Length: 224
Image (cartoon, rainbow, N blue to C red; front, top):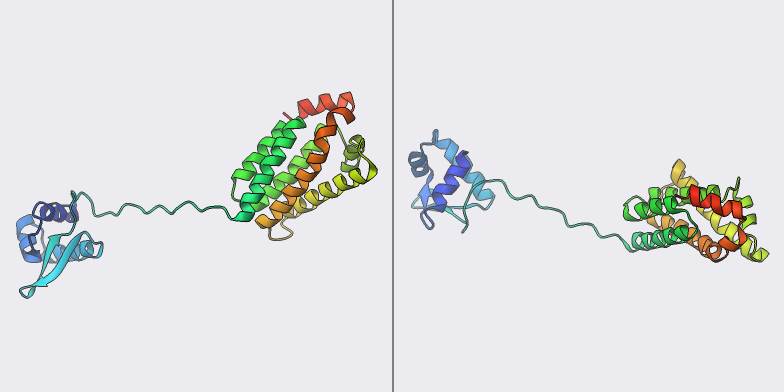
């Protein structure tokens, strides 16, 4: 047991009793007396004991009401940091993208997006959006973004152009995240996830009907 623990226990057993350093040193057999002085000053600074001048000498008394077993303060845990609005919105969009990818038989990509949504790194979130896009292209057996969009071309030409625009946005932002071309913030991740979601939302209702049978079977194996 340390000197501090012994002093605390001794004073705690005598609530309301004021003892100076010499009395504590004699009662507890702690030598030299300066050791008691140093310990009591530290305990007083920590708020564990009261220490004040009485009758011309500094006296000590127990300041708490519970048992004293250690001078160590309980660690103060920082309150969990709440995500800002941009991070929360980006996470919501990433989860919606994951849902859409599940409907497109890209379960592995969906899982990665959910992990990114639960993380705290916007750069990783954007890079995962790009990865999910590449995974989607591979699942459809397409060699390029243009080829994949052609396979989904049951929509009017203007619709395909919108899909292409959204997907190029995802790829461009994802490239910046992967290669460190710029500082990536949650606002960027929100834009990338939003663009991916817009493209997926337009693809989901028509993919099963538009994609060739071989592409659909390939998506089931590649997306898992």
